[in-house]
Image (cartoon, rainbow, N blue to C red; front, top):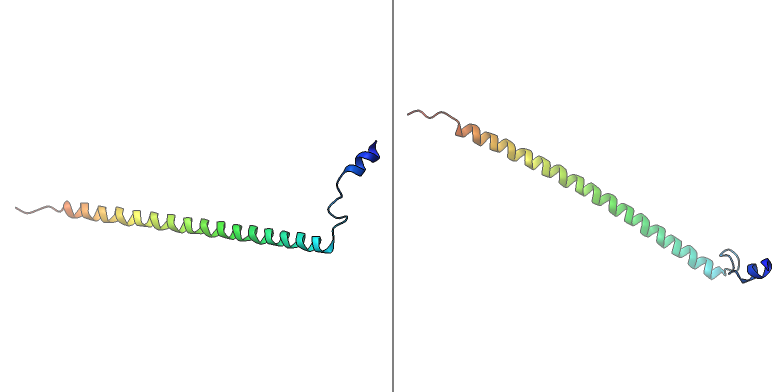
Length: 81
């Protein structure tokens, strides 16, 4: 019974693969690894760009706050009658 079950199982990937199949499998693996690497590099660039934009945004807000404070100080200058 066990032998019948084992004989019905498909062959393992290592056994029975022709050279062409092995080459295709290796090529697919290389392609997948290349895509994964490209995706990771893309995600890294996106995160760097987000950090850069966030930093520029914060700097812009700070500049606006400083300009508002200067305008308020200028408005508070006492006027002579």
